[in-house]
Length: 138
Image (cartoon, rainbow, N blue to C red):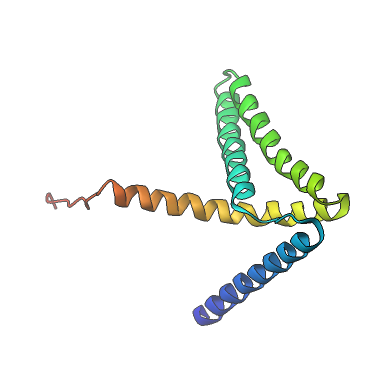
């Protein structure tokens, strides 16, 4: 079963890569605009981070009967940031292609953002030269 899971994971990854390539080639030929690029990804990832931390802050404040405005502001900034990417996609292409492509792009960028954050944490740990902790009091 593990081998089938790995093969399925690789097949889905290759299918998504092929879809991204097809969409980018089509959008560049027709609109001279690459739909999937690093600027869109970083902007969307920052927006998702604002949404995530804003939601956490809002929920914590809701439980503690605290100030809800801080979390709401972060959620608003995150939503505006993500919607800005959608706006740029529609502005540089047409309405139908921009909306459908943005939907696919935003769904794909959720998974890529999680992977990028995990990779960033690993790089930060490697650069800080962390050493394993040994418990000698067993």
